Image (tube, rainbow, N blue to C red):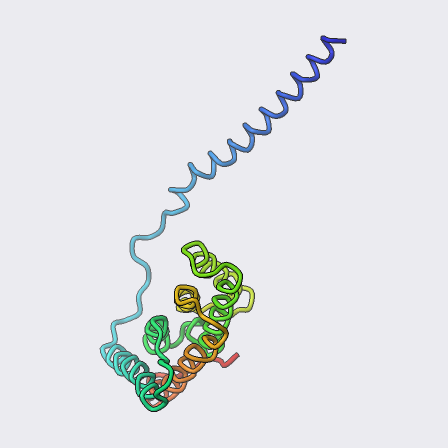
Length: 201
């Protein structure tokens, strides 16, 4: 009876060791393949250099941020500029054909991320952990809603860092995004070599 019990325990231990080895082996294989999966061409394809495009991108980005400043001066109550709008300007005026620069992504991405920030502050407060969670959660929700806009991650971070309340979603986030969008519609369509947007929704 005792030998049978010992044998059973021995078999259970062997199964556990076998499972651990299989799990470790899988992780080990993935880790050893990691350098190979990171391999890529040193230099990717690049569009031809266009001084005209770069100059117009400069003008558009400048006008976009100035428009937010001027609107803030006119309203005089709440600042409308947050750091993530600088990154949005790069997409709107420097990469106008990017899917992430289109109106749905611009407005939707910032709104989703602002909403995430407000929710995280309400549940977790403003801590380093909650800031990290907010960025990850903003990426997650933007992916699900097809509104991925990289500056949205910064909007989520800024919101949690400043312990934002619900008003953050409308001012400065929605107001600033709409000002940028309006500026982009004007500056990207007054010349024949640019067109924006590629699609609205």
